[in-house]
Image 1: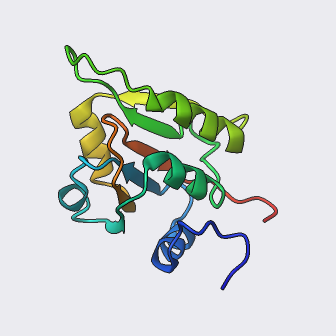
Image 2 (image 1 turned 60 degrees about the horizontal axis):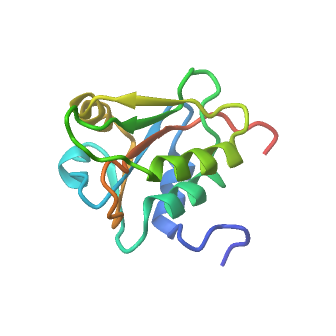
Length: 146
């Protein structure tokens, strides 16, 4: 066993986070996100039964966001005409700001632009999140002084 590793992070998940380098990206997908097809060239980690907020919080306890880009976080914007209001984004903002008080800007990306970016991710975490438009991309930064 290890100390201070969130229980939700499996050994495989921990290994993937450790392997990621500066600038690599990880997608945390909701239950509807096409993780396997988007992750054809990525490592897909199954986190069924868990929501995106708890995964997001656990990941940000272990990796920094990239301070060398303006928006190290990306969300899939609501498709024009869709009446959905993704209230889960407010929760994401609080989690991100709690871990990254200075480096927490979020980019909203058109659905297919988000998918194209996700195809280049190092890893994709497939969650059981039921909220829609709950997908998030994180760009890993540099760990300074441990």
